[in-house]
Image (cartoon, rainbow, N blue to C red; front, side, top):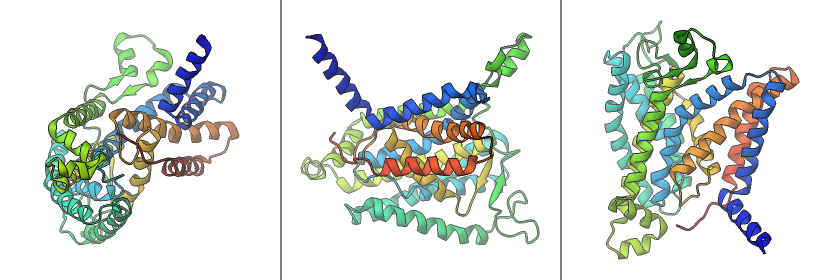
Length: 366
């Protein structure tokens, strides 16, 4: 009698977690187990995954508001990234340094995110049903437009402009002296420093560093998003995404709620790229924003989100799985074949996971 019930329970959890996600988790676990046998430092890889999670998690979180409002996956993420880039470059241009430059980058990026988000939201409200296709064109268009603007805008900071002409921003700008590691170094847990203070050795644990500040900011933003979705406005946003006809009949202004979700997504994307930059240590301009869209979309889909339903858990699980695979696979494979194929393997794995994510069943009920 107990066996059928056990089978039903196992089937329920398999359906709930998703069989493909279990396969990815299992493969990632196999990679972790293989690390000592191929000469890879396991604890260093754990640090790399934690760092990558702290860089990318807020960008993935930016997908949640638009998914809940029925606007679909935000393929127009480059628009939000541009807002963050404007905030970061203006902060340096105005002479702010150290952690204050990060604070000012957030402050300066916010009005751009609100303004661009309002325009983007108005556009999406005019083409209901084709949001994801139009969003892709919006992302490409804005990125291409700013490829010209980065050369034409009157930036003068010697840190950012080309040295010979004194005009136009360089493709890569170092954040040393500005907001490099501004969050990651806040309350950072560095086991090597702890061992030095204790005057003892902690062995392999000394390779682990935890960017506490970046993780705390993500936790704060994730909690704020969770709390918002449980408010009256958040419930209205979910209703609009689930059944816009019913929501309109209930007196909800569908277009206003959808626009609000786009503005929220744009702001989170702008903050997300600033957090990414402070961890990475550089600002990357021109075509760089386009490189974040597909991995971000894939991460939340791999985490279990659908085009009309997403949770904070989907964000966390998806980011860990995606970044874990992208980090571990090339490292372990290189160690096994003793050849430097890291970039080739990274491209194959990341694009393969994007392909898997985008071909999943994408509709669900709320």
